[in-house]
Length: 443
Ligand code: GLA
Image (cartoon, rainbow, N blue to C red; front, side, top):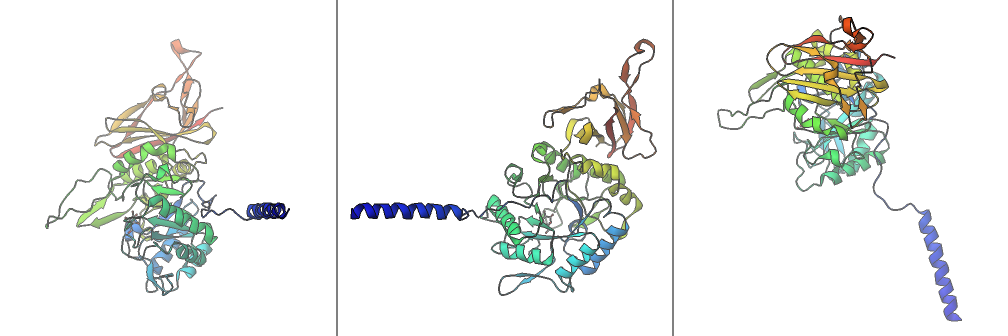
């Protein structure tokens, strides 16, 4: 009897325990990333490409004013991102502070100022002990840093990959994702490990975008390796064409909430590094911008906005091109042909429309027929096809505003009377330049 009572008591306690356990949240350190901050690729400006670590409050405020006055905020460029070099020291409790010589009003005041102008503040850190420019990294301080950023009013974090020996990439980025979520303020999480660990294969629920390549520079064609007078190999940037080749095969991994990031824009920028001057022509800038839009890439400007030329402004403010990038379907474009210095690209857009562009990477003008049946696209990824034989599209030139729209199918004449036939036209594509069109089905 005594034994039975003990057994019954044990069973009751066990049942109660199970019930109590079921009511407690299950232990799980992981938290979801913030949703709804990356439905379309991020747009904004970053200090790195032009200013590197030479940044300060005056420059950032002047840039913010330019972004508003030039109509860039209205065009969608809302993030103003401080890259490397804003950092001061960590205090005795491990909390990071801004460099008060560079940012005398402090980061919170800067965030308030930017928010008041309709902008959002981006900041930069690193998964290792140090950032790439050797400021304090976030390793071991992830939750502290996330809380600090949230308290300052930060909206975007670019998280780099320097000094990460023995750091596990998925673990490190997941840890920071959790920390950002726990800190309670929606923050866009821009992963920057240069594609070293194939983040496209594992980071869809970790970050909102991931870099797919090394660092871009204002160079259209690949840069030759060169050595300085001491025999030291010079830094060389990834060129626009190399980056396109690396980013192109990754289209299946991009989509709303998680984008391939082929690095920031170099439109209108120039730099001298290791004694070498880099700059692109206006045509190359246009081709670079167009290709980033075709690839649904983040549009993060990298030029000095306080000294912008009308030519640069015309490129970055092209609303039709931006709409291609920001299309709500969020499908990265596909390269239909890549031969003879010509690349043909298509991107499925909302409402049965397509963006179409031809890039001439060679050195001569090219006169090319827009022969629609020969440009047929059957895109397995999106399940869409252009179906030029039976769908008539209205074709709008996205760079030449004076060109009148025309249709892909017209009524045949002579023997073809009574049929709809392809309206084949010639187009000229300049060297290192593009032509781009939006094809909208005519109902
Ligand atoms: C790395 C990144 C760059 C930039 C620098 C800053 O090289 O890839 O985009 O953030 O660090 O030091």
